[in-house]
Amino acid sequence: MAGSSFDVWTFFSSMLGASVPIAISALLNSRFTLDRERRIALWRKKLDRLTDTEDLAGTLVEYVCSYKQMELPKVYQMLDQIEELAGRMLREEDIRQLVRDLVNAINRLLDVQKHHEDDRPTRAEVHEILSKLRTACIEATDKL
Picture (cartoon, rainbow, N blue to C red):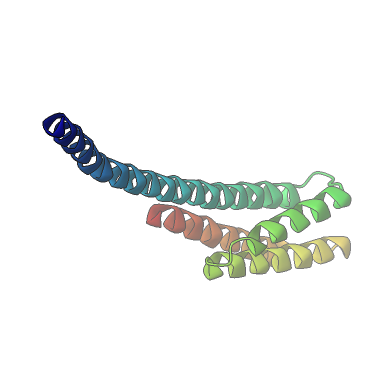
């Protein structure tokens, strides 16, 4: 009996010895997987914000700089949306500043248009800021 009891003990200790590294490996793998999934989710969110900012800015500039009649409530809604998007990009200071500059230039363009003054210099400024914003978004996307 003593011999068979020793064999059972040896069997259980070897099983325990084999299962501990497996459990540790599983814990580490799940931790690394969760970290990787979190990084991918953050990367996608940042990419979506950059793309949304670039798209909305382009749409807004096209809408404001076209020569057709525009709906001002729609313009102001789009301005609010782009400011909100910029507010979510705390780590992208250059993009946030360019969005602020774009909103400011668009507001000035709307004022110039309202007073029926020559809006060509302000239009040029709006397009220049949009170009800088597009470049900054592309550079930020390339860094991802």
